[in-house]
Image (cartoon, rainbow, N blue to C red; front, side, top):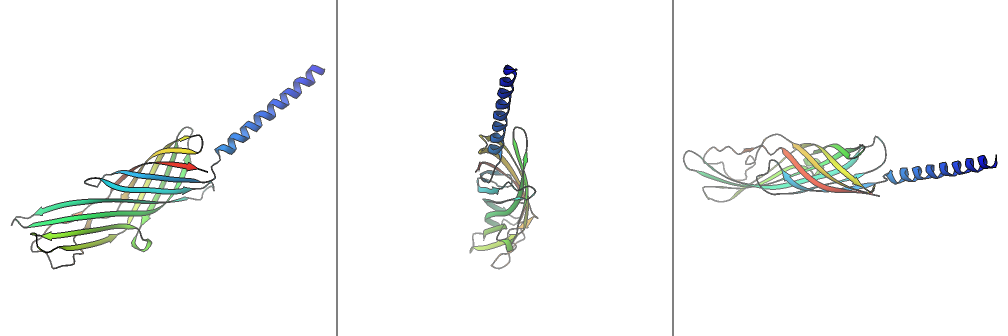
Length: 212
């Protein structure tokens, strides 16, 4: 009878210890707040290198979206020659900025983040192109154009130690085709040129999330 009592006590102590470990593990896995920081490594519509980033703040409140911000910038140079050998030189800097909302979707091994965003002039975001224009190497003109943009994105990450996550992201930026010379400050062109551009594309990012 005494041996059975000792065995029961050991079993209770072992069970309590196991429950304690599970509780500690659950507490460690419960993220209070997380900060995401990503850098852009590519934009599919850019003719060359890009600069950009994406940041976000995550919280543990269920069903309430997290908030973030994305930005990507690139330059484009083009010379257009018409049938009369007139030349139009264009140097354009394009910047795309959005405010976005996202959700963290739990998976057994990896973490998934999905979100959507929007940018417009009244939100100090959107698409902005600044173009320097020269026709036949004459006096320089400029064209500044702004338009709205929508964004959809996802991140796939690999968490470590419940506090650090490394992830890869893809942000799809979508907006209508734009005529980068439509807001030209000077006189009309001597000839007709096709200066419409489709800068919609995908921004690829790599980054890290740190949870507190």
